[in-house]
Amino acid sequence: MEDIAAAAGTSKSVFYRYFGDKAGLQAAMGELVLAQMQTRIGEAARAAQTPHEGIRAMVAAYLGMAASSPHVYEFVTRVPSGGPADAEAGAAFGTFFDAVGSMIEEPMQRLLSPGRHATILYWPTAAMGLVRAAGERWLEAPETPSKPTLDAMAAMIADWLFAGIVAESDTPNSSKETP
Image 1: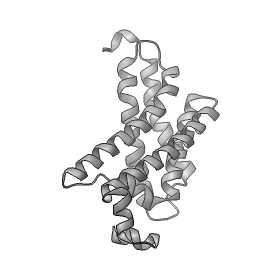
Image 2: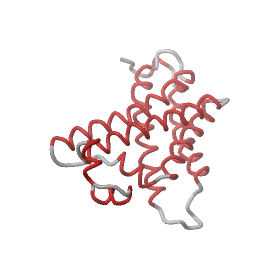
Image 3: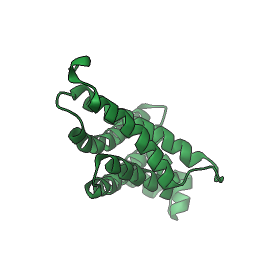
């Protein structure tokens, strides 16, 4: 909190008064970032002409926000460890990714054939895991000629995600169990 207060040009007591502790500040920042991310991802999805284009645009929006403020991204997505306050903040950030996953669910429902309930229950969560893991690895990678650009990385991730959902949509309903 001391470092954060110093960077903001104020005292720690100001942050403690408004947020209680670091977990409170982290939760408040998470809510703000989630709202901004929901807006950008929603805009990207609405502008897309096809489901594949929608996935690519949503992944690019997510990566773009993370890349534009990597320290803020890390602060709001890092799950704290420790006491009860940290457990509460960790639960809040689990819902952060659940909310982002929910945003990508609706466009994919249009792609799937009827009766693919199991897919739509699990695919958004798996998609967010892939986007987050690959995106964070990309963010941490040093700038080299072989590092993909943001657009190239978003396109690769979108291809990986879309290939899986398309394979699922092409599979006859009778060969898979649905809940």
